[in-house]
Image 1 (cartoon, rainbow, N blue to C red):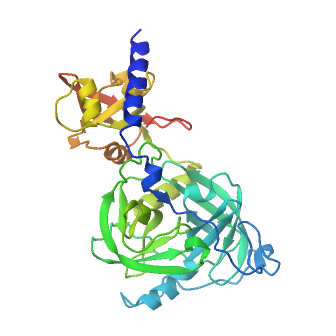
Image 2 (tube, one colour):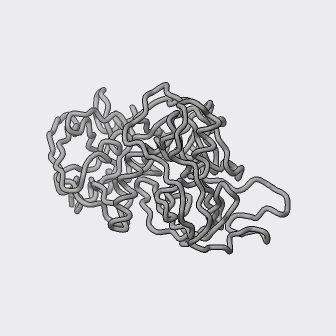
Image 3 (cartoon, rainbow, N blue to C red):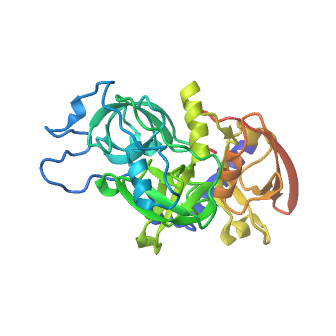
Amino acid sequence: MSQAIDARRSRRLRTILAGSLLPAALVLSGCTGSPNPAPSTTSSPGQAPASSPASDTSASATPITGAGSGTAAGNLPQLVENLSPSVVTIFTQGGLGSGVVYSADGLILTNEHVIRGATTVEVGFADGQRVEGTVKASDPVTDLALVQAKRTGLPKPTYQSDLPKVGEGALVLGSPLGFENTATAGIISGLHRSIPGSASNSLSLVDLIQTDAPISPGNSGGAVINMRGEVIGISEAYIPPSAGAVSLGFAIPAATAVDVAEELLANGSARHAYLGLTPGELTAQIAAQLGIQGGTGVVVLAANPDGPAGKAGIRPGDVLQSMEGTELATPEKLLAELRKRNPGDTVGFKVKRGDQSLDIKVDLTDRPATTTTR
C-alpha cells in the first residue's frame, strides 16, 4: 500500500516539476559535431577519402613527437606545437569529436558521447595520418571512454593531478566543427562547476572545470592544457550563445579522467556509488505542495524501494537538505557529492518530510549497469 502511495506521490511531483524547469537541452550543448563542409577530397565522418592513409594500420607507423619537450611557460605557439601531436580527431558514422593520447601504444582518451553506439572509429592525427580505432571501454556516468588506435610511438602528455587555479591561462586543443588541430585560448574561470538543470538528463555535468577558452561542437574529448603544457582537463560541454552565454565552456578534471581511465583499463568498467533515487529541484511550487516552509534542498521525485535510499526509509516527497553536513541546494550538488563517495560508504542525510526533520543513514552500493535513478 505504501509503495502505491509513493508511486502516486512520485508521479504528482514529476508533473509539477515538468512545468517548472527549463529543459537542460535548451541551455546546454554537448560538444560533438559534424565536419564542416569541405572540398570533395575531404571525407565525411567515418569514411576515409581515397587519398587518406586510414587503410595503413601498421603498428610500426612513424612515431610523432612533441609532448613532454621543454617549453617556457606561456609560449603559446610552442605549447600548441608540442601538444598538437597528442590530440586527435575521432570520426564516427554520426559525427566527430576529439581525443587525447593516453599511452604510447595507441590508447586514446575521449568522451563517451563521442563514441556512443560505435565499436570502431577512425582516428586522425596531427600529421595527417588516419588509422582504425576500436572502442575499448566506456563509462557514461563520467562521460569518458578509451579507444585503441592502430598506431604506436605516440607522445603521451603529462596529466596534471592537481586542479588548476582560477585565473591561470588555458588552451583548448581539438577539432571544433571539423576544423582539425584547432587551438583556442583563455583562462580558468571556475572550479567545481555543475551545470544547472543537467541532472535530469546527465550524470556527468558536475564537478567540472570552467574556462572561457572557446569550446565548440567537435571539441568533445579534446585537451584543456595549462601554460606548462600539462593536460588539466578533457573538454566536455559548453553553454551556447543562444542561451545568453559568452565563452562558457566546461571540462572534466584530468585527475577524474585518469582515475576512470585506469579503472576502465583494469576492469572494463568503472564503479560508482549508487543512491537509488531521482532528484529534483525544490521550487516554491513544489515546496508549497509538500507543505514545506522556506529552506533549500533536493526533492526526491522517486525512490527505488529496493535501492539504498528506499531501504533506508527515504521516500518520494522527502527533501534532502544536506549530505554529511554539506548543504544540497540543487540536484547537481547532490550528484557532485555522490561522485566523491564509493560503493560501501555510509552517508548521513538531513531530511525534511512535511514538518518533520529526520536524520537518515544510507549505505551506498554499486551502481547497476542500467538504471534511471541516481
